[in-house]
Image (tube, rainbow, N blue to C red; front, side, top):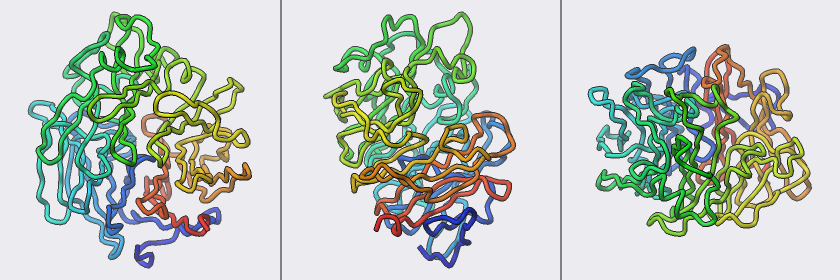
Length: 422
């Protein structure tokens, strides 16, 4: 990274060097805390650019995919897309090289969502049959749930199409769930249906009578080794009217489970079921070893989130540390000594003024420091438009990309964490 090409961020005296990589382009964000927007070579960084920041998108409204050259500072739009929402953008993922960039779009003639494989250096592109939530580390596979239906429980993570075009899942359906797309051929197949997840997982998902619930897929993530995925399902009671945005309209009625499985559908386990999530918690992801999962969870119902781990088969659930609170979007570093996490503005470890820390937690001593303090408060009260930092490590585990709201707009930042890693 040629740091001379980007302005330094120096508010609140960061403990590490930080640069704004979108100083001249408003309304930009990178995807999520489990996905680096920095390309495999480290040369480029991909972001999504909102066409507006004060409301949710309507079906057919387009935003832009932009690629930033971290050596020259050039920032250019490489595509427009209607396949986006306000938290994940277009779910932009890099593949195996700088010539493979995946993101969602919507065919506005049929309202069918799909993903593109784009070479941002030449403009060549190939249409995929399926959509992308997460790409495997080698770029061979894309995994995704039905992204048009994610707004049933929580808007911001999928794509927007007319609501009458979205199916309603009642019970353990066998034709919806999580789909794998082969990026070499573009072909899609159903990896695991909702019925599969509810009938084959061991230990099972504790759901009771599935026919009493609407059930949908949501998050899906490859482990760092690319040989296993973790997928989340969400469900809420059936009603006599169409239901949307249940986080806002019926939050306490929504239940969750994380299930892990191999890419052939075998070794299916409920790693964390509703009996755990109802205690209060959020944001699970893989450990670097690809065998364990980290999350925030009020495991002992003490009224306080903790950083927790569990094995992929559901065994070994326990606190990573009891000395600091959990928050935000935590990632365990490969050194097994540190956790990096942000926080929501309402969580106790936030500063209370719209700014939040990127927390650098030392597990060996149970201590923490604020690596960076960043503002995330923005004018719109709609929770779907909140700004989450989503700190994401690059493939070298040196640089962290995160979001903020600075200078009246969404901006993307990169921090060099090597000083703290020493």
